Length: 121
Image (cartoon, rainbow, N blue to C red; front, side):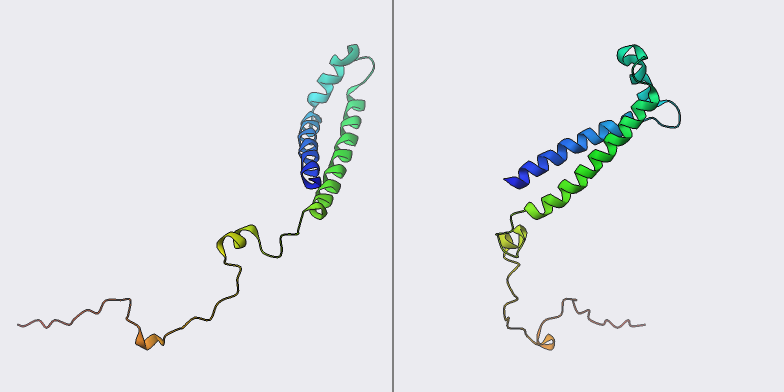
C-alpha cells in the first residue's frame, strides 16, 4: 500500500519535472520569457526572475524524486521469500535434482551417419 502511494507521488513529480524543464529558457529567450511577458502585463515578473524560479523548482523536484525513489526501495514488500515471481511460477528456483545421467558413449549420435559409396571407373 505504501509502495503504491510512493510510486504515484514519483509519477506526479516526473510529470511536473518534465513540464518545468521544458519551460526553462534555452540559449535564447525560451518559453519563460514569453510566459513572463504575458503574466500580469509583464510588469511584475521578468524573464530573469522566471528562469530563477524554474531553476529552483527543478532542483526541488529533482531532490524529491531522488528521495522518494530511495524511500520506495525500502517500502517494497519482501515477505514472499528469496525467489522471484517467475521462479515461483515455473519452479526453476528449486535446486537441481539428482538425475540419472548416461555415459555419452552409450547414447545415440545426433548427427546421422553417412555411408561411404565407392565410385567405379
